[in-house]
Image 1 (cartoon, helix red, strand yellow):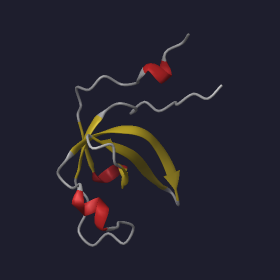
Image 2 (cartoon, rainbow, N blue to C red; image 1 turned 30 degrees about the vertical axis):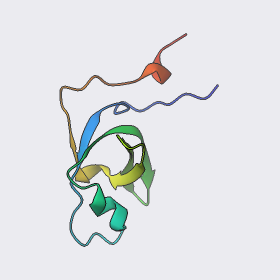
Image 3 (tube, rainbow, N blue to C red; image 1 turned 180 degrees about the vertical axis):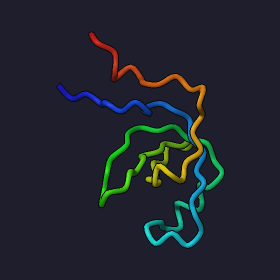
Image 4 (cartoon, rainbow, N blue to C red; image 1 turned 90 degrees about the horizontal axis):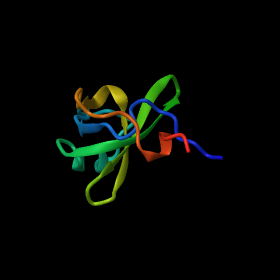
Amino acid sequence: MHRHRTPLRGVKAIARPKADEPGYAPVNYRYAGQEGSIHEVVEVGGRELAKVGFKDRKIVYYYLEDLELDPTAERGTFHDAVP
């Protein structure tokens, strides 16, 4: 069974990418300042990347440190529910 396990799943986040970050592409800056929600967090090269989904259904990866997280957001989604 496939389960998503991340305590930040479903948390609202606003992308705040650092200028001239070599790991980012133009799409990262296109979604800067927009609110999305975190789908999962993975570690790559010692840095945490968050997979963020936006209202237009676009998925963009951001370094977790470049996201402004909603501290009041409920954590988890239906994927985390125990059947």
